Length: 139
Length: 391
Image (cartoon, rainbow over all chains, first blue to last red; front, side, top):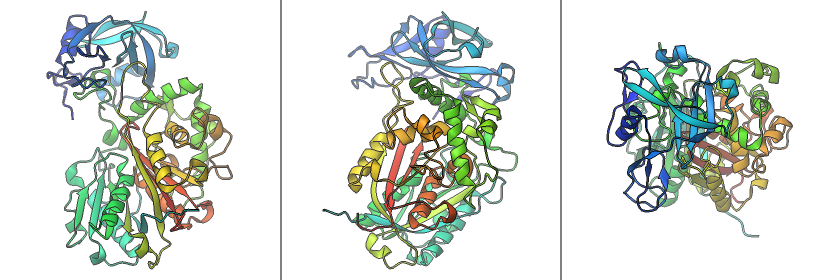
């Protein structure tokens, strides 16, 4: 179903046409999502077709990056060795102002201060060499 | 008043021993359960003409292949299939067996779930703790360190709790209620009482879930024998008549205006099953849910129509699903305190309650709902059973 590339010391997807724009966007400091060319629905990656109208025209577009916290969890144990130094860390779903939700870590905040609905903005964190991962921080 | 005939009947139940240690391969456990189920039904292995197999979605296909037929010594089958519907397969197998029996494709079908996640050197955290795809198709979530089902469900639980103003007491009340049931079940793996204080004091795994909000995986197998309702009348065990069944798979929409974490397919599944059986949620006496995490019980109580949406937290905190409560739920302790055999958990307890041989934990059982789901509560299947052939 998916392949993980651990060669950089951090789990990354094997890049393909369905995810490359997202990660290339991160390297350029951009938040990339998809948007249906036919019905204008903003879509969370990776969309192969538009789930609203069925169109195959779902190009990648840049989002503003502004969003709010939709839900989150806080890990109190590490499921893989490279995560041990991060514990406790959060994984969150962030709802962009355009509508799509992205999974990301919210950083530069104490996990106790996370509140659903809080305003967030993008920040890029170097998790491994050349991998500026899209994260969010309080706006 | 019109009455409804049952669509099929479960006439045999077999379980392997359950263990937190590795004792047998998955297929060996399956063979044990299959033969216990056949014996329980008073049948011979050569009476079986259909086999439906449910392996864990995280186990390899080779751990429980179609060759299970040969490992179990089953000959001349006219139905043989690996049912892959993730955790909902336990109930989906009975649905498929029912359709096979009704259509004449097969007459006597064994359905088996088996899993041995605990292996030498492999803990359940390792077995289930891989990166999970929530949003897409290419593992784009792995860099966020989203590993394991606890967090995947935790995201849903946090959203659900936020929506209805719930706190950890409401989650804890599920764990405490189900432990009370487990103490009445000789099959349950958890044997000690659990208090709300114990729940709150147990460490967080992935917040909002404490340790006691999480199910308790083990190695084991469950098998049932399904045949026609007419034939079941002459069988030695009390028949478990199947009167309704349904599925619900709503799809996950990750954008504003949708709450896939809360609006899961259980309502679709339940509505179809109630319609098929000609009953309403108020008619159901007891529910057996797939409850991998505490909040899953709350959400299913609501979506299967037993309490208003948003009302399950207070209902459970008030003791209503515990022994002595108004709506017995997960009467074997569920997966939190009984045993985690995926869809095999609600399947087996639903069969035992419908038969009426649950001893100290037996409850009124004219209509029993057994429900299973897979994925992150994405894929739902349920069935309504009764000791009565006509309703």
